[in-house]
Image 1: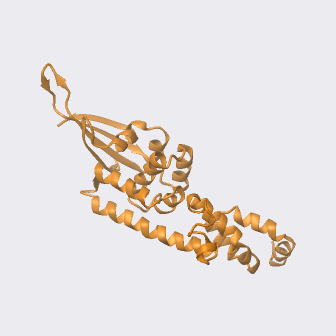
Image 2 (image 1 turned 180 degrees about the vertical axis):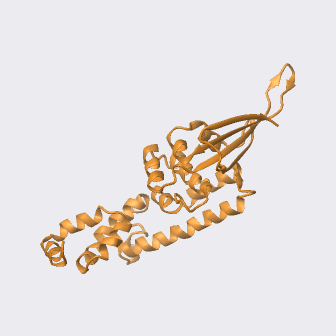
Length: 248
């Protein structure tokens, strides 16, 4: 298709149809489409498009039209509001990343700090799309990927299929973590046996799909007979779903 044909199509396309097309896209695609021509720049800069993007990403923030978050109250357009809110969430994501970095000891994190990270996400009001944008990234520490996955499934109640799709689109579903937990030894004829350590290497994809045992250990933390839980990136030689019980 040459330039003249493209211009002809744009001229014949009703504005309401163009807006419907733009409003059905993700924010990155809206920005790309808006750079194609003056026509699409105007369509993609419309409040109609950015209002939909804002409400899709932060649905709980715009239930009340009289809310201070609404552009009608802040005298901003929806695009400016989206950019402002995105920048705010970017700063919050940086807080989460720094918290995990400080909590790491010899490339692993204790479950107490791990659960505090998830509580921090909740207090900062991260939504599913915020987690996708800031935490489900291949360049990040896999423990941040795990925190995001756990938060979405257990705290936000996102269906596993949606989480798996997000992992696949970010190309991190095959990344693996190692979860170890120590249990008090059992009593045997009046004697307590030595404590046991259990270890699981599992991929993020498998964890989201079906591994309730590991998610349960992570969610409960060190409680009752479990005296310690430690999470780290799996070693390269590790295989998914490995299982080990040892005496310590």
